[in-house]
Image 1 (tube, rainbow, N blue to C red):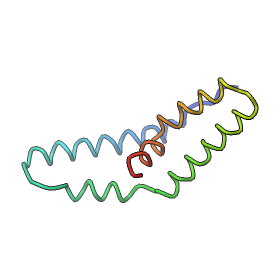
Image 2 (image 1 turned 45 degrees about the vertical axis):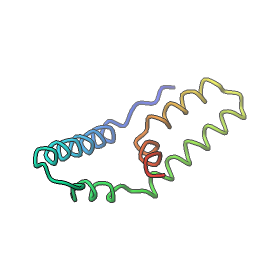
Image 3 (image 1 turned 45 degrees about the horizontal axis):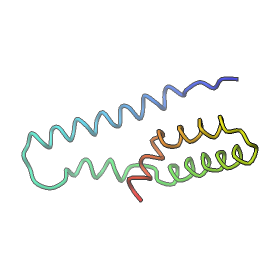
Length: 94
């Protein structure tokens, strides 16, 4: 059974990254020194507990698939973890 992507979640993440990129471009145009306060707000607005929860859940699924010998599933779950917003955000944050 194929699971389909949650498009509303995908579009939400795209909108967040798009606004961050726009703000970075505006900050570069202003030639101001230091970090933009709006970017700091976006960084602190990330739901870190939810990110930790999602990464732990994916890691647990990887362990379970490894124990069951489902190597294709392990590879797919590893790809999900490394390409997920939560995984990337925690990798940068840690």
